[in-house]
Length: 164
Image 1 (cartoon, helix red, strand yellow):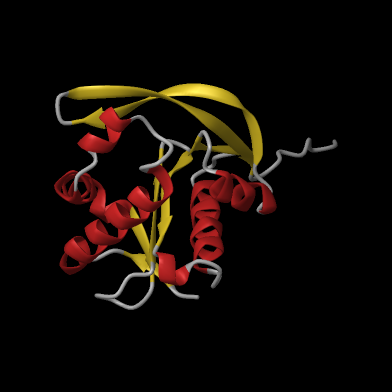
Image 2: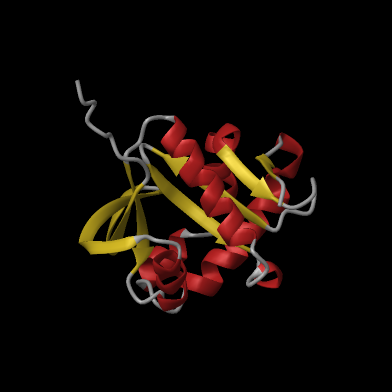
């Protein structure tokens, strides 16, 4: 599956994909106060600010999924409902892992909403291990929103001692 960097012309398509996928996965399990912050426009603004680091699956203009890495981890991974179970999420996650490893990351991290069992099962199937709960501070229009999440980690590479 071809994974590529997002283009500026895809911003609106990607914002809609992220908005719909986020609401599908999170609206029922996260605090209503956070859900109110997560408007289509909020996703569009957030995407615009990180567009050069957004990796996409699917043809230009018709994205099937997106992944954003940040500071040694997988910051966001979302796939359209129509692409679930097709290998898109696995391809995006593998691409993110390879990118992080190429940057020298030994142990990658990601956060998963508590209660998002579908995502948790996917991460565990792909070799990620839940290491506990942490509080992350999500950017919102008037500051930050603290949210407790499951933290996952994955060993990407090991440094082997050189024998002399």
